[in-house]
Length: 471
Image: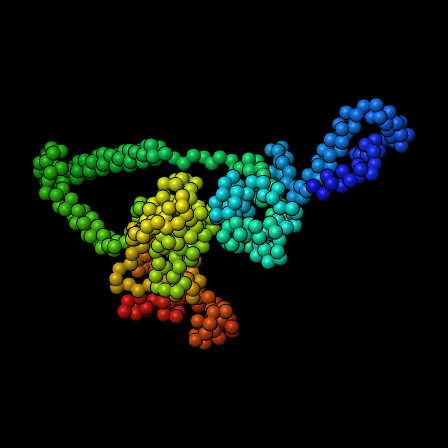
C-alpha cells in the first residue's frame, strides 16, 4: 500500500496535477466515450489552472482512490454476508455449522479465545484464501514452508501445532467460514423445552393416581365376585339339604380361610422378593450419582468429539479402563477457562485441586488428591478385562455403557449380571478377519473359508466356560 502511494507521488513529479487527474478519471470511469472524455478534461483543465486549492483536492482524491483500490485488492478471502431469505446461503452456513461443531469447537469459539484464537475476522488475517485453506488442512506444512503469518501464530501460541484436517476440502472450509461470519442464519430451531421438575412430578402423580384407581376398582370387583360366589355356594348347599348359617361380611372377611389365603399369597411374594433381591445384590443398573465435579459426557464426547481413550488411557492396554485424573483435564483447561453450561464454577474446582492459578497461567500450589465416585463395580470373584474386549474383540464402549455421548450425568447402563454377559457371549460374533489374535483357531478359520460355518461366537471359543471369568 505504501509503495503505491510513493509511486503516485513520483508520478505526480513527472506529470502535472491536471494530467494525473485526467488519467485517474479515465481509469476509474473508463466507460465514458472518447469525445465526452476530452470535452470534460478540457473544462477541468481550465478550472484547475485558475484554482490552486482544487489541485490539492484532486491530489487527495487520487491518493484516496489508490488506497481504496489497494484495500479491495487485499481482501483476498471473500466471505459474503448471508440473509435468511437466501436458501442456498443458509444451507451452506448450516453445513458449515455442522463441520465447525464436529471439528473446531474443541479448540475454537467464534467470538472468544479458547485454546486457539477467536475465529471472527479470520478471513481478514490471511493474505490469501489458498493459504488459509492450506493452514486448516496441514498447518505444520505451511509453517515449515516459512510463511510469515503461519509462523507468527505458531510462536504466539507456544509453538503448538494446530490439528490438521486433510479431509476437509476447500468448499467445506469456505462453508465453515460462512457459518462463522453468519452464525445467526444457521442457528437451529429452538428445541422444545425439557419438562421441568414440576411437570415431571405432576406426570408421576397422575400415573400413581391411575394405578391406585385401577387397584381400587379391581378390589371392589373382587369383593363383589366373592360375595356372589358365596351366595351361589349357599344356594347349592341348601338344595343339597345342608343347614347353612348366615354370616356377616365382617365374619367372612376375617375368617380362617381368608387368613390362610393371605398367608399363602404373602409367602409367595416374600420368596419372590428374597430371590429377586439376591439376584440384584451388588447390581446398580441406572445408578447415576452426582460427581464432585459436574462432568458432561454429552459436551466432551458428543459435542467436542473427544475419544474415550484420551481420558481412559489404559482401556486398550489393561483390564481396567482407568478413571482419569485431573491432570488430564488440565491438558485442555489450562486454556479453556469457561464452560458453556456452568461457566467457571466447575472448572474452578479443577484449578483448586491442581493448584493452578488461571490469572498467572502457572501452578502455584501442590496438587491435591481427587476422587470420583465409582459407578461400575463388579464383584471380587468376577474377572473382566477391558483390553480383551476393546482391543482384541473390537467392542464399542456403547455396547456396555450405553450412549455415553448423550449422558449429561454418567450412569450404569447395563445390569452387568452373569446372565447378561453370557447372553452377549452367545450372540456376539468373533471378528476373525485380519485379527492375528484368533489365528490359533485353525479349525474355525477353515470352516469359515469353506462356508460350512456362518459365524463363530464368543461361546464357540470358550466364552461360556466358568474358568474364563471365575478362577
